[in-house]
Image 1 (tube, rainbow, N blue to C red):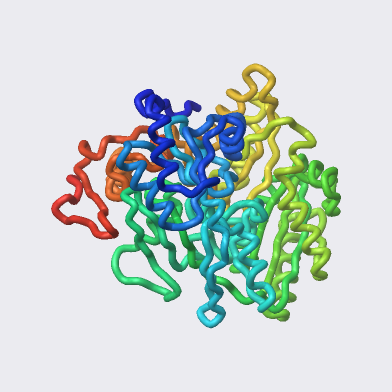
Image 2: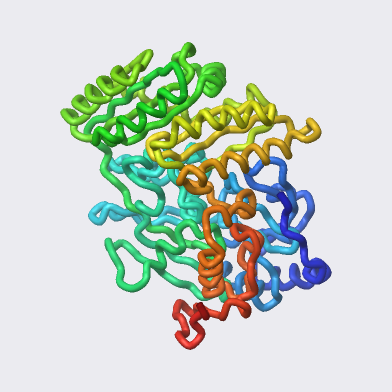
Length: 495
């Protein structure tokens, strides 16, 4: 994987760019020393590091706008950044770009229980939203495994999910509105506390746009009342394929669990050694299923789940009705990524989505690929919606291991697309998957997406080098430009 090449002409003007940034930012809001830049030299994507030209850390919208206007005027790239937990390289800095950190935008601005929503700044962590409303019996449903650290702005940029996305949806299904600054410095508002808006669905367009269209400065999310009752089950199977067939049968029955997760034997062993949640060690695959709602529905759902599991050959079925026991089971699932550090020095976390019916075949084929590459891997994923997260284990200090891990990951993603799936379920494309985007989209589809990029960022300065395998100049596509939130119809792109 190649990082974007730096523009020597921008690097030559570094002193001038920094001097201009100091004019629009308050003291302490600009990082330029090598020691400070090192703290921002990468995200959670393994093994890739590159220091940015400078790091701007504004604390007011006006400062964000000023940085964007200045960058546009000077022809400098900008990379928005939240907590830096991106697993696809979406927040990797550019050597010739300003890294724009939203870390100081960390306030919960308003909680509207009547309209069941919360207005927060992009630097608020995912879990902090639930913490802010749980006293009144509410919570925010999307819950990535990194929810204690990842921020809502990044969740919107990558359309993140979590263990409960099967029933409650991804970020896009829980997003009501946002505010964003365009590359021109213009501030736009999309959606709001109301349930629907007229016109084009620009809110949906911005969600999952990976920082290529604008810098999010405010987010309005849906909050939900906590369910009356919650019950969970831990189900053991003799094989991954058997567990995959059970997943398909559960969904086909009409039962929609709040969460339906899977782990294989290697992942279970690592988690047991890490935090001992009490998973069965004699099974090749373990399913976690959670049912929520009225107490009567939970009781009926768990009985239905048990009947399906036994009919599908489950080796074990354990119910967790007490809150402490249920939380312990989920704590193990959410600690799975960290637990991998016990069995390998490095890990590549993949992200692809397939139709549920394809689970048994795809999981078997991944095992074949692992043998071919001579690398170990562990399966930990959102089984209910087919969102796979195979964890490829390797040692970056061993010559050739990183290259093999990346090639293995590419083959997994190709397998997902060949099986009727897609390249990403929630991590985004970023740098990691951009060279594979042509597998999922035709040339015409990629060009149309790039026309949208041109509408928001005509000079291609916002998070360049991410998502697209190659980016055409907007003049080649026919320019469509959003100015102050309005589109000039004479400039619509040629098709």
